[in-house]
Length: 179
View 1 (tube, rainbow, N blue to C red):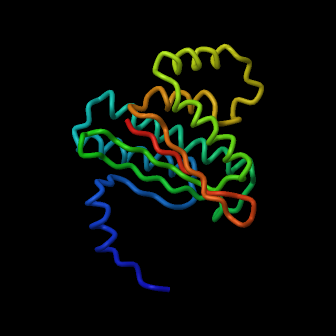
View 2: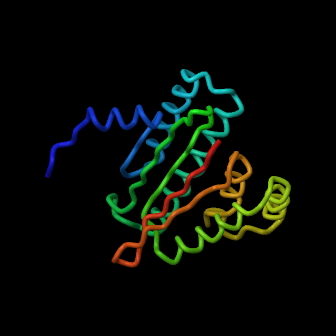
View 3: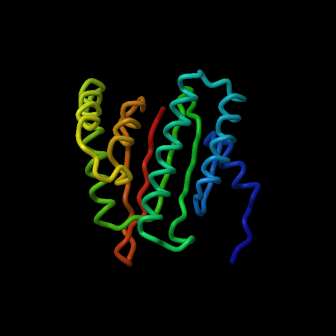
């Protein structure tokens, strides 16, 4: 194995304005601790309070969805890991990206939902959100529903999802939200 060139990695993070990056298993306490660090970074970055709230909320929604999904699958700690990157664009917007292993079929369904949401304007997203609120939810932890719609409403650009198939029937799913 080649040694990790931390200097190059740091330079890449600085060039792309990455504020926070994590790769590994996501526990409830770790989500909370990274969330606290994120709040501190946003404060130090003098983020507008509304933007800071939206970035934090998006981070929480995405990481909790990952945790719930992988927990429901009872995957090993290695397979239940997540990759989370939060950066700031030159125009001042924040980008929250999160990814994890997912069953290929589940990933295709979530990508289709993200594509559907990306095609809606703010008024249509609001209407869809209200419609979802009125629907009965037999399994509140089913994921990729109301919370994802909320993230789409919060985002300043359409959500983007990618799915990279793996040979074992799973895929790596990633979601990008610009706040």
